[in-house]
Length: 200
Image (cartoon, rainbow, N blue to C red; front, side, top):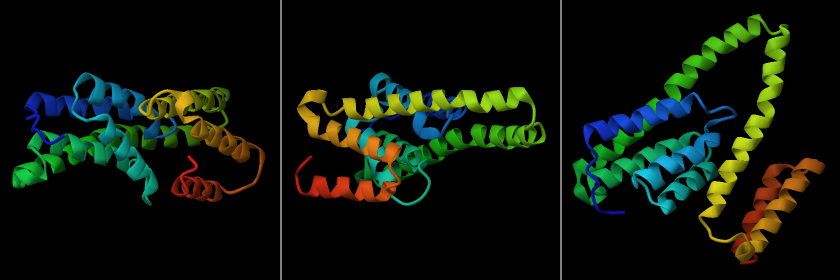
């Protein structure tokens, strides 16, 4: 997307407040909020294309470091699209950096503050029955959020039956992770090799 979107001040504020609200919903990590990010950034506002959205996640997950980096890439792309691209000079660069700052500030500030306060309280009251029940009750929520994230990312590639080798590889990998002691990095390497060879 090379045409400038020219986001207004209220739209920049909306971007910040959206990430502020998602930060408090990031149970199990920020990756669990991907479906709502897609709804807002791609479907509702068209601030990102499907390709930019998926590439942001793929690049950040492949790169070393925390997985929250995909939020910075999304902010970068929103800003870049708003500023007219890197060819627009300092306006494009400035908009891209503003997008990064707003997205990362929004996604990190509330959850970091809440985590700090809640972990201190939870540690002090760790023997309470309600605290133990709360921790155990979050597991199915995290699993469901991760499944919805996977669905959003795969739905962009078309119908499932046309890509059955990918689904088969995904199912086999999930079963191997669940039932064996094979390290996940070996499975990721095998998947990369299958992709390079053109098998999937």
